[in-house]
Length: 592
Image 1: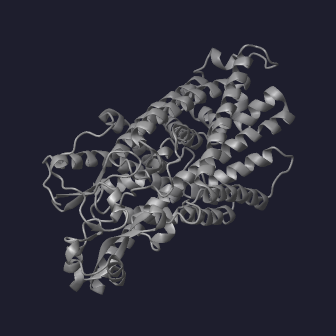
Image 2: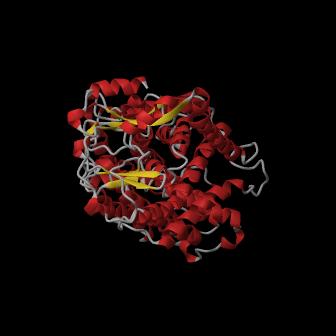
Image 3: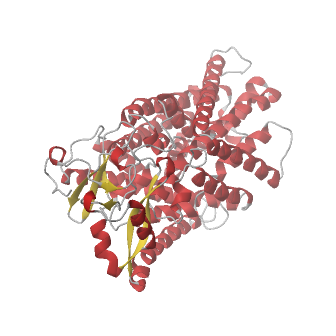
């Protein structure tokens, strides 16, 4: 089953070997050796080409236990729902403050589109290499940095566990809900409402994969309709058909005030734009649930991005047509609420705030759908305890374990920290490790290209332009640098009242702890305990497949390695000579 790189593997590979592992006969399973690295090629059931990956990666699931419910339409709205949350209803105000002028603020949105398109091309190419693996960057980091073995899976898993919460989206939704009323909520009322919104989204995902995707589609349609409504209203205002006096005032000298902004503000504006387009890669978290995934996503994800980019620009034009620049800069209201109020009055504006509420819920639902697949894929790598909890899709055919875990972590973060400094600190703490991993993932694309070249593999279904990859990489490096730049008001004038880089330093500390944990678990403890870590393949009902890391005593290592292939499946060299049944082998492996 082993071949040297550079040969014509596709013509010389043998047929599927005899493996004691249920479900393997549904895959095309091949093994290639390249120095110390072991590669396997496995074909899933989504109609994609074979996935060639280093054997320490989670095994391909021949039939997705989550089904194949992600259609063209769903890919569009998984992307749109994740990108359009509440940012477009509030970000224009901060953009104007950073840019100083209407013209420059508008100009930044196409820049954001360009950078996001570059990022999308990076994900396209990475997905084309692993078309039957869901989880997005979980997979791409695992494969780009396969040595030291399990280092990135362990580090990413630990970071995912420690920082696995999405409290900010739920709290923003709760704030919008109270804007529709005359009630000024207490801190606990706001948190209780946020928890209810979050719990509802999680319950929907746990109860039905199909139902959660359909609801996401419906909310996506409402979200697009909302932005189109704002856009049309803006054109009506520009046409002078409303009571808004002088709607073109902000466009007569659009770049007035630009000279007053500095490099710090302009860089902040770029950061805001980057986050406004965030979530464009959500569909890549569900690749193994998409039939013919690369062709499907390649046709739909760019369309989604283009639609969002056009609407972002037009909605901003509508805001600037209806609201004087000074009012946007000085108002404490969300820009969308101020827009509705100036055109329809205060009473109607409260009712129309229901549209941003639905937009926020669509964002929570879609982000949780993607995150649940991400956490599940971390569990399938075998580096978390109790792999069945993370991987099993019982009882509803949904990723209940990851969703339940995310619900617990986020609920703690909603109810625990007080608003203000603590909340802002937590958001900053969560964002920085994400930026670190995205930078590493983007650079890892070049490493994966080199790996495939060494293996003699042909070109995949998509290849990003080098210039696009480098531009996206530079934009993400900027997100790593910006948190270290002191605010203009001093080191205590950041997002919180204490030292501005506290969250960044804490995030680096968490990553360092993850590295220490990895060393202790994979190297130090095995050395002291006289054993080594090996992986085995865990088969669950419903088609779920996972790795499980087990301890093998040093005296049993040779036997173990002889009886298992690089992925951890038990090898049967000659079935007629096999004396032990599959169940007996499984029992022995568990004992080891």
